[in-house]
Length: 131
Image (cartoon, rainbow, N blue to C red; front, side, top):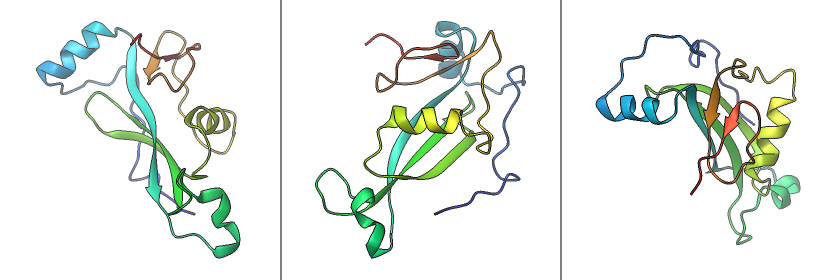
């Protein structure tokens, strides 16, 4: 459904020098080893009639596509994957993107991790903080 140019979204390295605000520095202290945060969201989509069923939202009205994004601590997107049907769960989208060799998903190095919300399960390289 959508394409992003690689020139626009460029992964940072885990050792990149960051220009952090005090709040962002505090988050780095709380989550040592974290290299960014990821989450999914729904974006309104115009879909061909024959494919609308799988893109319908929970209310059965408008069509949506799932968008998975990763931001570093400078609040810069370092990865975006769009186009999944609106009824797919965030964890399903992430699993499929991680295991898709064509996605370019930037797996964290062995000693680093991404922060995400409780919609996802804790696993190596990914941490959902206790709520």
